[in-house]
Amino acid sequence: MQTRALPRNISTTSFFSPDSLRSGLLLLALALLLSLLVHGINQAFGAAQPEKAVMVVGIAFGSFLLLSLVVYLAKNRHEARPATAGLIALGSVLILAIAANAYVISFYVKYPGDYIIWSESEFVNDILKFRVGYPLFTDPANNECFTYPPGAQLSTYFFAWLSGNPTSIPAYRTVQVLYTLLAALLAMVGVRQLLRLTSEGNAVEKRSLAALGLPFLVLVATNSITNPFVYLLHNDALAQLGTIVAYLLLLMYANSRSRLVLVAMAVLPAIGFYVKQPLVAWAVFYALYLLIFDRPRCYRRVLFLTLVATFSLIAILGLSYLLWGKYFFYWVFYVVAAHGSSPLRSFRHLLDIWPYVLISLISVLVLLRHKRLSSPQFGLWLIGFLVLLQEVYTSGIVWMTNHIGPGTLIAGIWFWAAMVTLYDRLSDWRTAKIKSTHWVEAGAAVCCFVLLFNGLGFVAIPLKPMGKDAIDYAKRIEAEFRGMPADKVLLDMGTWVYMNSGVVMKDRASNIGETGFSQTGDFSGFLSRLDRKAYDRILVRNLHTDDFWYDHAVWSQSTGIRQSIMKNYHEVRRIPAISTNYRFGFSDISVLEPKRDDVASDTVLPGSENRSASYY
Image (cartoon, rainbow, N blue to C red; front, side):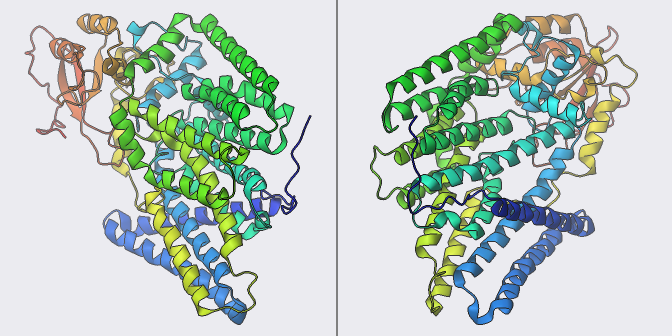
């Protein structure tokens, strides 16, 4: 077995050394402490004076940044270095950005209801199915299945169960946060592997800059442009972690050509598929690298990877067929493929994520300026960029950019490696005489870097995103279930209310929204249940608007569900919408009960004091 020796000018000192890891974790801990300060300020001013709360937080953050610089300059005086001062300023801004983001994210993580985004209800429904021994994939007429494989759902349940919180929605979201932090940690390992292949001088040993890598990559892993759901119940968090593991294996292989790493590369695409379908594409990316960029080229390795990856995927698909039959393929392949990808939406998403395309291209200019296009280093960048482009293309299926998160974190790996290398080339740390221009250059460099933050989606307004009304909203939903069998109350979205009873509810809005949009659904079962008045109470959002999730105005063909609901049920009251950044699951809820022969179709029963005249 051949191995590639390290370049002579690269030290074997680990970039991901205990010192750099400890420093990075300490910076994260400091950011969390500052988030408590943000919480205290918002408690004092936020409810009545939100603008004043933001101003006070801004003053506190500015004071922290100024104090960190003053302490350094006062301690070192004439020995102070512009590059070091720049690193302190940059590190302070990174910490403050994490503090603001952590404060905002904490409210969503703690929220008890699983309807902040469309996927949460189905995510939890899969966990509920597993708990009660119910098949994960069933007849389309049931309208109760998720279009993603169950890897993220089941692993989330496993870790929540280990923690002693098997039915806790906040525990499930906490697991997603841990997946995201682990992805950032492994991205740091990726920076080390990349520097071993591309860096010059002793840039690998810049531990001061290495410590800042972890906060930077945490911000990339949670950025609001491509990773807005990694702390919510979606497959995104584990898919990002899986993608970083896949890319890290490629970097490790490029450094060592280890057969053991090659085996891991061969089986990972099949495992990744069980988290999110596009991860199976890593088999193609790996084969492309081995075929074009691996040196010395070995066709036996290409054949080995292709055969093992193929048989692994066949094995996992065969197991899925044995467990769930044809329904697994219907939900995981047919429904998703029927959506199609809009090139126009994909192009729009490419424009939305332009800062990440930019930093990826900057990294090529910095790290690969002397490398040939056929070099392994260029191949590594190209694979990462192809991952990004693949995610941009598949994001054209929907209107959001959350599918592009893993590719942007790979871009973050390259960018931070480039920053480490630039620091070595351009900094004045070895300069005996400091000039005033060095201070201007350091200040300008930090300002340019920080100005990227908003474009990269790092900036969060440090305000409480939801208040007591959000908790009351969940409690009012729960109140509609009291004294009634859970299987007789249909809630369009939200599974937490069914967890204790173990009821797997049919006819969910997220499910019908998927199949209604792609015109692949079977709604006969739901329509029959509505005609039979099988539900004693129905709670649905947006019933009187075009944005009705059971029968959306933009769909090419109506499901007939709205008409059937209005025919067989009447509205008795309403749970009003609340204001939150995630408005998706917090809109008006119509509470409906079966019509009686002596009640007119437009009659509203007493107790409908929550009915409003307008709809958003």
